[in-house]
Amino acid sequence: MKERGHLSGGASLFLRYPVGVSIVTAGIPIISVTDGIGVRPATTTSMDDAVGLGLDVSTYSTTQADLDDGEVGNAGLGNRSYGGLDMGRMVTVSVRPDLIVGALMNDGATQGTALQILQNTSTSGGGTVVSDTDHSANDFSGGTIWCIRGNNVGYARQIASDTAAVSVTVTVPFPRSIAIDDQFIAIPYSGFGTGASAIDGSNFVQLTTLFDGADADIASGTGGEVQVIKLELEGAANSNVLFMFRQHQWNRHTVPS
Amino acid sequence: MDTFIPRGAKLGVGYSKAEILQSQVIHPQHSAAKGQSSIGWLDSLITLKKVIILCSYCRGKFNPRKVGYRRVYVPDYTGKTDGYTVNGDCDSCRSFTPTAGGGTAYQPEELYALTHQDPVVARRQSRANAGRKSVYSAAMNNR
Image 1: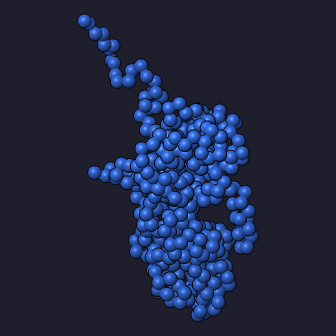
Image 2: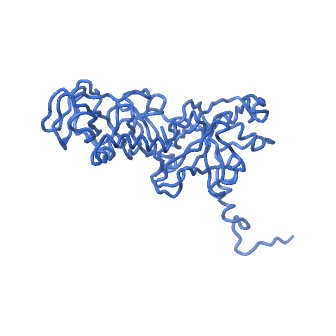
């Protein structure tokens, strides 16, 4: 995931925090937990108490050690460098609550998996139905579908209803009829919505296994709480969802007891 | 013994507002080891491939290319900064960078692509994508 700016503009603020577990990937959401040891990566389905976006990796250890760890000059940078067991236990985080995070959308829980391309199998003269048995078994109602090949290239619509592994239907028709073999991509995310059933594509994003991207093969309204800011709808391998954390630790409306 | 108490005395009298605020800031950043110089601290950050933040006074003394680092760019929607301003605690002089002319962050090249955009590459990709569509459909696409 990438820092893609701040809703209110201005410069980023980076702070360092001790970690409670090892962080092996840069560019993942970092959250607070209740153990008081340090921050941790988010889970695939929760970004509550978000601290921000982690920008480097770190190794957690309970071994007592000074900053230099007694390993003077161990990295070939001259005798001023240090192994830094204690320094290694911290992570740099971009902490502003209005941070906009950009996440690559994937067809599943593995980062880098291209989205499923739907190849329409049944003509829709009214431009409202895209049919393909390759469509996800998850309910994308409230998500978005856009055309990448055929009469409607570049046009996107919000998904009104979804028949698992069969078709998706939109309310506002695509401007031209949908022909057989036209290609579309459907995702469970949307740029707007209230969170109610079938209009909940803008309120949740599920993360990939390593927390470094968005799993776009889940039901709309599933995952960690966010607010989608924008969708970058391009091809199967380079489309992104941009979002803000809804449960940021500096943006709390209530204090936990 | 007489003790003189100034009239209207309050907690914090004698300290400036800035000093009082500074005392309340929690610094999660680990401080340098006793006796460790700022150069040693920076070398350690580089060894561990950590992000480095420097204030406007200190950044001129750091050559990121020499150690495989590059400047961090984050788009600024207001345009008030050029996108290369990042604030935090300076890793050289320890000052909070907003009070030291603004900060700049540096990141190892191998981690940069995971967390930040290259503005030149982003613009090239955006123009290439938009070139495949009409202006209207591109706008619809990016709603």
